Amino acid sequence: MARMATGESSLARAVRLLDCFHSEESSLTVGELAARAKLPTPTASRLIAELVRLGLLERTQEGRVRPGIRLWEIASRSSATTALRAAAMPILRAAHAAIGQHLHLAVLDGDEVLFIERLSAPCAVINYSLIAGRLAPHTSSAGMILLAYAPDADRERVLAGPLPAVTRNTVTDPARLREVLATARSRGYVINDGHLHPDAAGVAVPVMDRAGRLVAALSAVLPSGSGAAALPVLRRAAAALGQAISSAPAHPGETEAPKKVSQLLKNRWGN
Image 1: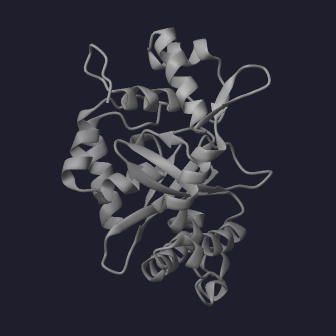
Image 2: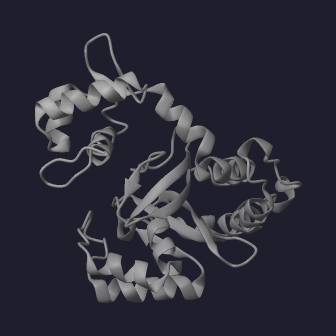
């Protein structure tokens, strides 16, 4: 595999180009891609042409570049998150109907929270997360509960890194964050009020499989001051998700909805 003078492979450079796209800018010019990937324009242009030939990128009529349908196809048929989402959707829909605000399913990927599903409502409170979007774990309730249950080495690596503030309520002191995470683990949930936006509160619980291993985080975003109201629904949903994920077939196309989901979540707000 060809390498630059820096020792970086062509594959690594291609991945850097693919990483330049996000939901708010789904198409970019060759020059923009080269600048964002920090590659010489001729190098970027050559790699883009190859990715277009392979169907991983495509050119628009305006001459811009965007992710190709083959990239989506490969991810959809092989990603572990596809099976996780398929097993979770019936339960997520039932929980979302009870809460009526934003609902997320998230996993820890490296030092970031990756949101693999999001259900919302027209009048829901402001929320920054998106499907396939990422956030720093210390800024969100989903991230905090994932860190609370993560292996010690993973948690300490995040605590040792930058912890930038998003609002004045964001926990940026490592010692304080360590205390918050310990409390979250002992309680089995975390509530962040105003950590990501002053008008929003996040509440999250862990999703565990039958062996007690952390699989994901289930979180809701509600108006500030009302995060605790969603806890009963989230806890029942997380328990149901753990059962569904543990019993789901490996192939996402074979996943069946768990029985009696409505009974698991029938009492709104835990009443």
